[in-house]
Image 1 (cartoon, rainbow, N blue to C red):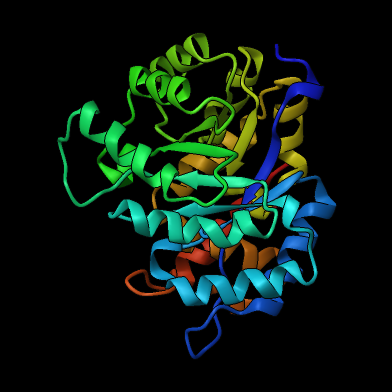
Image 2 (image 1 turned 90 degrees about the vertical axis):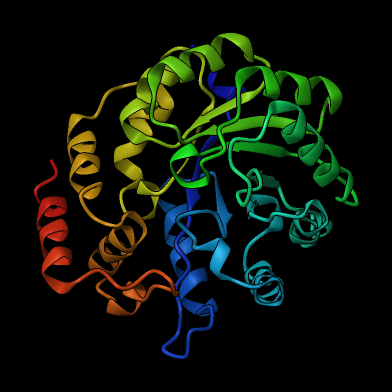
Length: 290
């Protein structure tokens, strides 16, 4: 198991609260992040998948980061980057990097499917080159959403081409054979597992931590996985239940339940708020956690 001092830790893949007018609710976001950090998260990731990053425009992202960093240190933050043009990826990354942020969660382009590794390599290379001061780049493997998987070999090629820039991989594929290959081939990178059901096993095999959605509402229950590689079966059972619903609205419903603030329920189009009956089902399952 990787030494604790050499691990990335737990980053909250934060939800993004919205106002009734559909703008980012900066005050609620900061309140939420302060709670997650106090409960044991070592960093937070803005505008990832759970944060509905593809639904928030560049200007709104920049305005939100300015307001968040007025209260919380930029060095605690990563930002999700989701773009089809590599120059746009650089523009999404630069405000965070310029502010002294921790790093970038860089997803592949998603408009074209079935593209070869050679094309993906060129895209990632151009996206990194479009960053003014590239560092802390975490490659994002999420084929269930992007439909563009990242091969273990592609990651190796990018790591070799951008030493000290490519810092790790967020593996949200949810398939242990891939995760196992990734851990075996890239022990020098931070391998972060997004699926809580695989997290403890990955840590025992050298994984460095996680960027995940459950840290929005149950960080203390995840820390045994992160710190000691201990299985927490109740968390895995809640993941199985959550996957019956749209995941991001479901996580928002659980945050609203834990915080006793229904404003956290609001989703940005094209997502919709979780129906009240489904939110009650998830809340009841959460309340039964040991």
